Length: 255
Image (tube, rainbow, N blue to C red; front, side):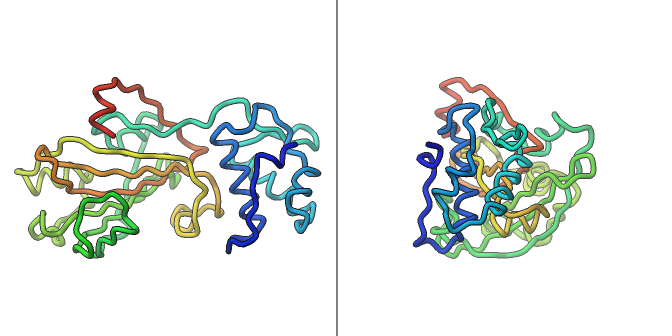
């Protein structure tokens, strides 16, 4: 039965309807459900009897709208295609990747501010606890549509007078190279997944909560393996796909 693929924990703070949307979304994305499996309203009702049928239909309709399922008459089915995974070519910026899909890509700096590094929040970043960082938020528009945004964190102590740098004239790496000629970018570790958008992400991208987005976490280093950047990027999953093949040697460097 379809509900065996899903799990609802009523001890959690998240409401049952949000949990149900998330668990269906993640099961489809991870290919845990066989292709063309019916998403039966009756089965979902057994899993979440407290939800009205109209709410279950609303959840399934949103999943269809996000490109994770299809509808035939009054029956919903999982998609046969796999959800594209998000990968990167070595050293290629998000702006350049978007240009491969759209004729015009525009970046807008929406926020520049000082913050602190918190290891529990910014996992795996090799900065000291509460070290001062400069946060630069960029929004990416493709064909005049808001498609993605990124939050980049740079350690202030590594870049003299970085608070005075104008990041609006060029891409991040080109700006750093221009203002800090001794700076040498070598490689990045990049981890990614498809996730339901949080309240924070949906607010910035102006989408409904739990809409699937690609999430990328980036750690960039100098040739001496000194980390100089930590970034989070979010891209609308139904508007973009990434695909890249790596050699074993490249993977060892990236992971």
